[in-house]
Length: 131
Image 1 (cartoon, rainbow, N blue to C red):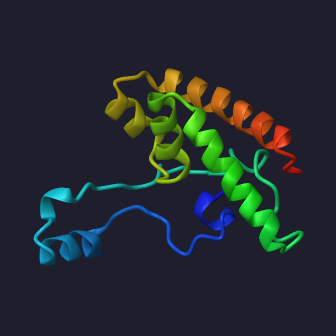
Image 2 (tube, one colour; image 1 turned 60 degrees about the vertical axis):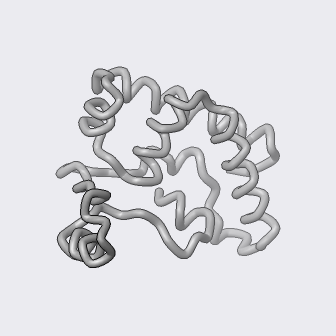
Protein backbone atom coordinates (compact mmCIF):
# COMPACT_ATOMS: atom_id res chain seq x y z
CA UNK A 1 0.00 0.00 0.00
CA UNK A 2 1.34 3.41 -0.91
CA UNK A 3 0.90 5.54 2.21
CA UNK A 4 1.00 8.64 0.00
CA UNK A 5 -2.00 7.40 -1.92
CA UNK A 6 -3.78 6.32 1.26
CA UNK A 7 -3.38 9.83 2.64
CA UNK A 8 -4.64 11.43 -0.54
CA UNK A 9 -1.24 13.02 -1.05
CA UNK A 10 -0.47 14.28 -4.51
CA UNK A 11 3.21 13.41 -4.32
CA UNK A 12 5.22 10.50 -3.04
CA UNK A 13 8.84 9.52 -3.32
CA UNK A 14 9.40 6.69 -5.74
CA UNK A 15 12.58 4.87 -6.71
CA UNK A 16 15.11 7.23 -8.26
CA UNK A 17 16.42 6.99 -11.80
CA UNK A 18 18.61 8.81 -14.31
CA UNK A 19 15.97 11.50 -14.80
CA UNK A 20 16.09 12.26 -11.08
CA UNK A 21 19.88 12.35 -11.19
CA UNK A 22 19.86 14.71 -14.18
CA UNK A 23 17.33 16.98 -12.47
CA UNK A 24 19.49 17.21 -9.36
CA UNK A 25 22.57 17.83 -11.50
CA UNK A 26 20.79 20.73 -13.24
CA UNK A 27 19.91 22.13 -9.81
CA UNK A 28 23.52 21.89 -8.65
CA UNK A 29 22.51 19.18 -6.18
CA UNK A 30 23.96 16.04 -7.76
CA UNK A 31 25.53 15.07 -4.40
CA UNK A 32 21.99 14.66 -3.02
CA UNK A 33 21.21 11.85 -5.47
CA UNK A 34 20.78 8.41 -3.95
CA UNK A 35 19.93 5.50 -6.17
CA UNK A 36 16.77 3.83 -4.91
CA UNK A 37 15.07 0.81 -6.38
CA UNK A 38 12.47 -1.66 -5.24
CA UNK A 39 13.32 -5.24 -4.42
CA UNK A 40 13.28 -7.38 -7.55
CA UNK A 41 10.50 -9.46 -5.98
CA UNK A 42 8.83 -6.51 -4.25
CA UNK A 43 5.33 -6.98 -2.94
CA UNK A 44 4.25 -4.04 -0.81
CA UNK A 45 0.97 -5.35 0.53
CA UNK A 46 2.33 -5.67 4.08
CA UNK A 47 0.36 -2.57 5.10
CA UNK A 48 -2.94 -3.67 3.54
CA UNK A 49 -4.06 -5.20 6.83
CA UNK A 50 -3.31 -1.93 8.67
CA UNK A 51 -4.90 0.70 6.46
CA UNK A 52 -8.58 1.14 5.68
CA UNK A 53 -9.88 1.37 2.15
CA UNK A 54 -10.17 5.15 1.76
CA UNK A 55 -12.29 4.72 -1.35
CA UNK A 56 -15.00 3.01 0.68
CA UNK A 57 -16.38 6.16 2.30
CA UNK A 58 -14.87 8.92 0.21
CA UNK A 59 -15.37 11.30 3.15
CA UNK A 60 -12.76 14.03 3.55
CA UNK A 61 -13.22 13.92 7.32
CA UNK A 62 -12.28 10.22 7.29
CA UNK A 63 -9.14 10.97 5.30
CA UNK A 64 -8.19 13.81 7.67
CA UNK A 65 -8.74 11.53 10.69
CA UNK A 66 -6.54 8.88 9.05
CA UNK A 67 -3.83 11.44 8.29
CA UNK A 68 -3.87 12.71 11.87
CA UNK A 69 -3.78 9.18 13.29
CA UNK A 70 -0.81 8.26 11.09
CA UNK A 71 1.04 11.43 12.07
CA UNK A 72 0.44 10.87 15.79
CA UNK A 73 1.59 7.26 15.47
CA UNK A 74 4.78 8.25 13.69
CA UNK A 75 5.48 10.93 16.31
CA UNK A 76 5.13 8.31 19.07
CA UNK A 77 7.80 6.01 17.62
CA UNK A 78 11.42 6.01 18.69
CA UNK A 79 13.50 7.71 16.01
CA UNK A 80 15.21 4.53 14.77
CA UNK A 81 11.92 2.64 14.48
CA UNK A 82 10.31 5.58 12.67
CA UNK A 83 13.18 5.72 10.17
CA UNK A 84 12.94 1.98 9.44
CA UNK A 85 9.14 2.18 9.09
CA UNK A 86 9.24 5.23 6.80
CA UNK A 87 12.07 3.86 4.66
CA UNK A 88 10.05 0.75 3.96
CA UNK A 89 6.51 2.11 3.59
CA UNK A 90 7.00 5.66 2.36
CA UNK A 91 10.22 5.43 0.37
CA UNK A 92 9.76 1.74 -0.58
CA UNK A 93 13.34 0.86 0.32
CA UNK A 94 14.28 -2.80 0.08
CA UNK A 95 14.80 -4.67 3.35
CA UNK A 96 18.45 -5.25 2.49
CA UNK A 97 19.08 -1.52 1.93
CA UNK A 98 17.39 -0.61 5.21
CA UNK A 99 19.47 -3.21 7.04
CA UNK A 100 22.66 -1.88 5.48
CA UNK A 101 21.84 1.78 6.11
CA UNK A 102 20.72 1.20 9.70
CA UNK A 103 23.49 -1.31 10.57
CA UNK A 104 20.89 -3.96 11.33
CA UNK A 105 20.44 -7.53 10.19
CA UNK A 106 17.67 -8.14 7.65
CA UNK A 107 15.96 -10.30 10.27
CA UNK A 108 15.99 -7.41 12.77
CA UNK A 109 14.50 -5.09 10.15
CA UNK A 110 11.71 -7.58 9.40
CA UNK A 111 10.92 -8.06 13.09
CA UNK A 112 10.93 -4.29 13.67
CA UNK A 113 8.56 -3.80 10.74
CA UNK A 114 6.22 -6.57 11.85
CA UNK A 115 6.02 -5.25 15.43
CA UNK A 116 5.57 -1.69 14.22
CA UNK A 117 2.77 -2.71 11.82
CA UNK A 118 1.03 -4.44 14.72
CA UNK A 119 1.38 -1.34 16.90
CA UNK A 120 0.17 0.78 13.99
CA UNK A 121 -2.97 -1.32 13.54
CA UNK A 122 -3.66 -1.13 17.29
CA UNK A 123 -3.14 2.64 17.24
CA UNK A 124 -5.58 3.10 14.35
CA UNK A 125 -8.18 0.96 16.09
CA UNK A 126 -7.80 3.04 19.31
CA UNK A 127 -8.25 6.18 17.20
CA UNK A 128 -11.53 4.78 15.87
CA UNK A 129 -10.22 4.12 12.36
CA UNK A 130 -12.20 1.17 10.99
CA UNK A 131 -9.97 -1.28 9.17
